[in-house]
Image (tube, rainbow, N blue to C red; front, side, top):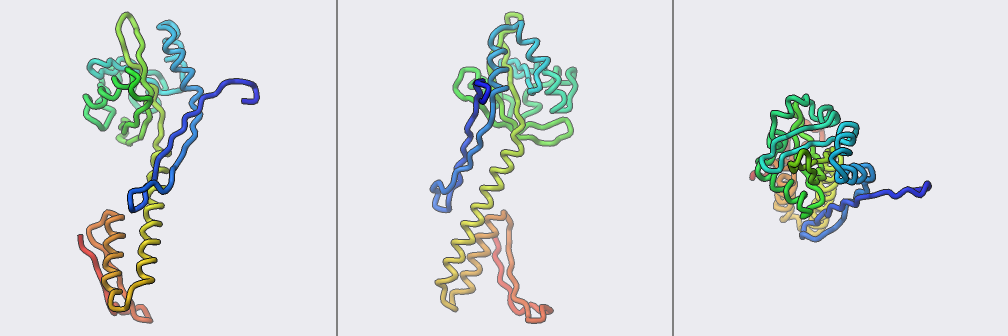
Length: 231
């Protein structure tokens, strides 16, 4: 930066596919992960430094037994984020937070410890039953001659929701453009079949079982004609 300090950024890219399965657009996020990198580095340095960083960090950190998934400890930021007390956490397993089966979650954590993956995205349930999308960065630390996994948790719910919204928006735009092009070339006798096909495309996109379209009289008091699509 302007003060000569080194900063770390992470680029996240999500492809958006067109109806033919080709990449049409890419959603890119540039995220400042300097603070997270600093925490990772300090946690790796020594057990003594771990306690200070763990307790004072504003980042959510879970300490997990990689053998059975038991939550050995959490910091105050984790209590604030999830809504559980420290005592409650210490009776829990990582499977109590994650939507995946505990063994599958543990397998992903072990892969991160081995360096096979950098981060993972999980769906975690808070104490109030709210579901959050979280990104985890995991490493190994030895405490009292036992290996643990430290998991730094980042709430990425807003980012994931924005990506889904943009994907849906692009897919809907692609459908409407495709249908508009087809309608231009339809003959009069093909119009009803074209409308039913359009109802099918829009219904499948919206995830509904049926869709209708109505032609009203000029005074809008009577239905003159209706067409429908059923799944």
